[in-house]
Amino acid sequence: WSMWNFPLMHELGVVAAAPSDWTLSTVVGVFSLTATSLGFTTFFLGPWAERAGPRYAAAASATCYGTALALSSAGCFTHCLPLIYLGYGVLGGMGWGLGYISPVSTLLRWFPDKKGLAGGLALTAFGGGGVVASPLISALQSQPF
Image (cartoon, rainbow, N blue to C red):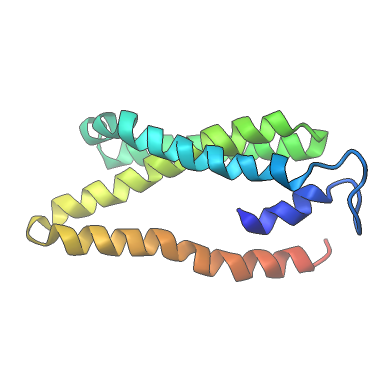
């Protein structure tokens, strides 16, 4: 998320912040809400995801995250920060939470004798996405469209 802080703070002013641009303290809260939403989703919707199965949980995850990105882009386009909080903060966290539960629970069922290894590898892959995404986002941000 930190890769998006600077562009969001300079949305209206390209080189320097415009008077109506958002400050860092207002933008950083979006990721805090995302992390909180992820935690609540895994806690409260975890039992549903186990009953429904990984396909339904993954479909719900994709729906939440896709809607989150659409709402967040609408919030950027209209310069409406509450839409970004609702989109990426709430729905994005729900999408991450459900998307996290689906493969981890499946791996734990596939490898009942190696649950620690399976869960650890799933967490490594989940966290390692940032290693790949960070240079990709930087490269995309430096290219004018």
